[in-house]
Image 1 (cartoon, one colour):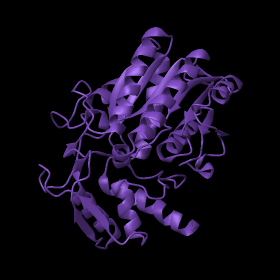
Image 2: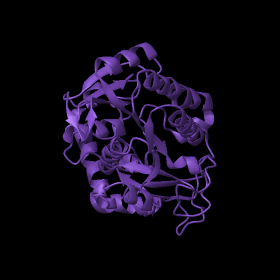
Image 3: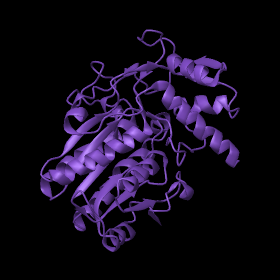
Amino acid sequence: MALQNGLNGKVMVTGGAGYIGSHAVLALLDAGYEVVVVDNLVTGFDWAVDPRATLVTAAIEDEAVVRATIRDHQVRAIMHFAGSVVVPESVSDPLKYYRNNTAATRSLLESAVVEGVPHFIFSSTAATYGTPVKVPVQENDPTVPINPYGMSKLMTEAMLRDVAAAHPINYCALRYFNVAGADPQGRSGQSTVGATHLIKIAVEAATGKRAAVSVFGTDFDTPDGTGVRDYIHVSDLAAAHVSALELLVAEPSKSHTLNAGYNRGFSVNEVLDAVDRVTNMTIERRYEGRRAGDPAALVADNAAILAALPWRPERDDLETIVKDALAWERKLAERG
């Protein structure tokens, strides 16, 4: 069993066959950790799991399988990515989100406590803030979600605080902003059919998978009227998880809630302009009304994560994010 930065055991990655989870698996393996992935493959892909990791096909609420996996693999940390992530769907089907994101995580946390797993890293979201009182938003700003997706994640953050107060476990909740791009080495990327991420949709249009890109809302209180978001490269985000794990191991009595973003926002039109520049083509834009649950602007104040971790973004450039996403999209097209 590898001893890596004091973690005498493996890391369990739930949802490790999905988009962000598969990149975290790569980052962990590249850093020398041993990894076991638990994924039900409802939205993930078994081929997305690096062969250096062990894949257990199961749901995180299957406590018998999860607990046996923790014991069999001597799991000492859990990175939890499994869940549902589509904001508009959470508005139309809230119970799905409270089941998959909140109730299922309760089961996973109970398994962690019963089996004595000391460290837990949670895939949270900037949607916990709702419509922020100011931009950029800080971790201690009000959390008033405006959609069930954000609320389901905020409820999990509350569970983590309570569990860490009652049991010998510490956690880091990373509140993601808009994750985009793909592994620069082409090992993984966003592969979900019908994805709702703007850059994913735009590169699908660039490769002929879509006829156009819908722009939802042109009357927001932003410089060009379209929504502004903080886009973080998925590989930078994965690296932040490894740094967060090392912090938890080094300081087992402390827990953290940190924004994961770049402290820079781009509007929908600015993102599409970048895609046009990278592809040297003009993607058709279809302007439509706002979607339910979308704030005008959401940008991270990332001072806390930069202070807490040695992590520093390495791919903090919109065109770099687009280029990596485009390269992955072309690879998917070659796969058929």
